[in-house]
Amino acid sequence: MSRRAALKALGVVGVGSGVAYGALRMNATEETTSDANETPTATTTTDRPTPTASPTATPTPSTWRLERLSQTQLSSSVGGFAEGSIRPDGRYAAVGTRFSGTGSYLVDLRDPSAPELVHHLPADEGAVTCLDVKFGPQKGLYCRSNHPAGDSGVQVVDYGFAEGTPESPQVIGALNSGGTHNLFVHPTASVVYTVNYSDDPDTGGIDVWDVSTLRSPRQRGTAGPPGLAHDVVYDPKRKLLHCAYMGEMVDGYVVLDASDPFDTAEVGRFEYADKPSYADSEVGEEAFGNCHYAFPDPRRDLVVVGDERSYGTPGGKHVFDIGWRDGSLSDPIPVGFTQSPNAEVMNSGGEGDTDQTERFDWTGHQFDIVPLDEATLVVSGDWHEGTVLYDITDPTNPHPIDTHETDAPAVENPSEQLQVFGDPPMAYSAEYNREQGFALTSDLFTGVYTYRIDGVTGSETPRTSNTAESG
Image (cartoon, rainbow, N blue to C red; front, side, top):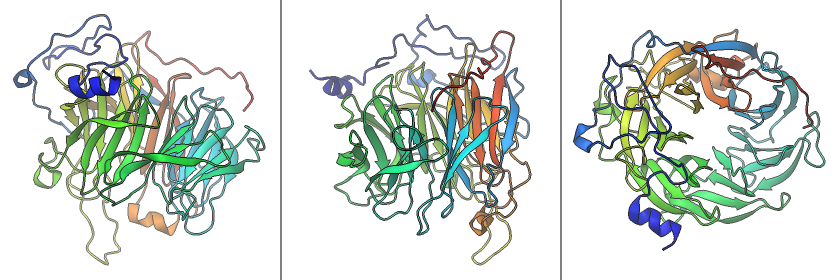
């Protein structure tokens, strides 16, 4: 039987992840404990506690904290800073932008307490935005999305691979996918996955691109079910694609087997359609809708799935069991839920109302998992909350533990297109670099921030080396 068939038939627990690893379920008065060498005793579905959120103005006290190291506006006067991506070795970050023409930035992070702007590469003309940026396995290259962008949906930027340099980048290739919002570059193969926003019931929601020839990438089919795929993340440990769908055909979390990166197959999904809706739920109650982003725990068979809502009850973060205890790849089970620490109903202005609204304010956005020795945390860009740190060490009790408002003075001339978001803080994304032990957050109005995540004695993240290296 093939690996794919086995996945479908068995919902394999812990593909490629070794032992089952996770914090044991605890009472409110017990401390969280975990043992990487101990397999937790399985519980039945009826024994699993009902996940609930407990949003409060003050995060749960914790020894873990965000230590701000720096903030920079990257010499921009208009703002619109979107996705921030750190190269795996921690040397550089690429930062995309949400609004027309601004393009992308490359930032030197040798000293994360003093980031330096290396280049600004404007976007093509024609209302093009570069919402997403991703590094690939080859140094000197990053990809940036163009949305909407006619034929050039993703550009390959050479900043030291062949013709370009960090200070003088060159666009050397384009994926003619049409406008795309989000993408993911395979870390070991010459493959790029892009969401295509297709409404064709016979076309998968994710395009698969062969970029082995950078100047002439070619599409090798599609992945995932038809429908509006919003984001996709490749999981190298389990060789899976974790996909977030938020359209009418599919709204929910979808798992794909990507052991052959060009020929994927669905192995499981969690549909939101028949689950409690945010529209019918109070703040603090677990609900589902507008599945926005899914990111796997690198050490445990868990996935954090975030929902995003513009108005009304804000979307929260779910922790899904895909083999940690009762769940599997074929049957993902939500075991924990949390919302941002100040979560409240977001009111909207009426049609034509120019007053500031609360659009997106308390919903979640892009995030990353922080796997530390004594804990598993999530660092998130959560719009008006700024940077939020969550503790998911016990996946049945995820909760916010620290925040930092990304409310430094805004850029001098914020784009008119930013007005719909009100005022800072409006944090777009957060990412953690395991190699050098720091996090980076981008804020639409105020720029880029770097952080240490410090905690109990013996658990501080490693300090960054200032040793220079070539691009």
